[in-house]
Length: 528
Image 1 (cartoon, rainbow, N blue to C red):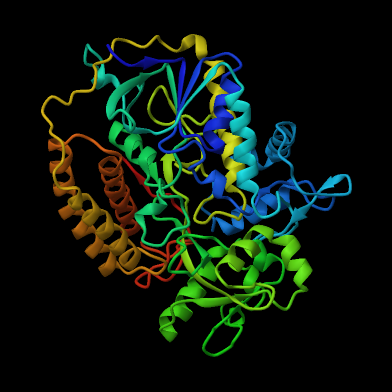
Image 2 (image 1 turned 45 degrees about the vertical axis):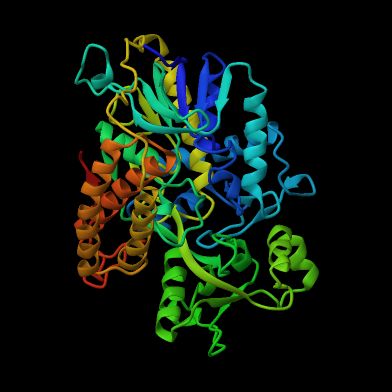
């Protein structure tokens, strides 16, 4: 067998993957595969911060309640308790790794975001994710037991059916990955594999997710036989910068937390009082995103205005240095004028089903972060709970693997990747066309507001594309674009099937055909 062996394979170099790798490296040799550069995941993009109970007047019970309220009754309470009780320790570990969180005197400075009843967001200005990513990467690069391999695109999990002696066990032994520099596919084998590949935001035309968020891990786990849950719950961030040159620049929730107002640019009305008079701009994201979407559609607008120019200029510059500077470069001075914003896909709440030990249905495969459905977010994620989930479940996966290490079998002989029957593609345009088509109809038919008819139209198109993509995949040598297209189509299919299955409106799933919320909250679990 050709290929590269290590004790544990981690797929993804963001907060979840690196947290797992650092804990595992105490005892194991770990290989971390990243599809692009090591900093290309969502973690580095996170502006807001990390939610944790650190304030004297705050309690675990209240953070749990806020999370459950946002999740519209679909969260699993034991998961919510498990994560929130471990939050302060996760922050402490990051402080020890050297993350320079903002402080106020001897304490960490806490900001507030929509849906939270207290100030409980620790942050590094408005670029928390970048600081966290840098600290985790530095620690991983300095660790002799961790091998970091950027520009490696995973194609499929290696399971029993890839063993030299075929097995139907479904046991995962690593992954086949394309080295984009050499164009070669190798088997990266391991006794344990941690999937930390991020979300599927790029299924949509407008998304704040990085270019690589094509749902690879969710699609790979599904193809290998793992159940997937709650894929209909796609979070749309209410305020993404509207600019034809700059795609997916997020205007953090904290701008509304510090007094930003949403205004209709045509009527000049501050309209949130119509949709949520009590919480106004601090209502949960699904409500604010639907309000923005409604104003845009009703008035035929390209965008709405987010305005914080009534606050003192120094206050704005001090709180939002990154955003202020970025906007100035585009000719917008947020201390004096409003920011044009639109809703955009922001977070994948569903994913591969995991337990508190981060185990998936497949033996040998653990998962953490945005590619999973752990029960933390339910029908809508509370702001700044996402990085927290990465740290807690990255750690949980690593601890569980170390606890059962002696019981994990050695890797059997695995067949090498076979590309004897394929040729180089002569029609890259097919990939581009299909990619654009998926993202457009998902935005129009499976977006913020849905109907059964629109969902059925999307399902019909996905079925047509499925055959085309499978045929293309079967005949041509793999490229990152082709691998991503195959995974996008797979995730689009899972989202639409889940959405058609839910005959109610709850949290992020809002359908005009079933506007009421059912009395009993039930997860949508798809079985391969």
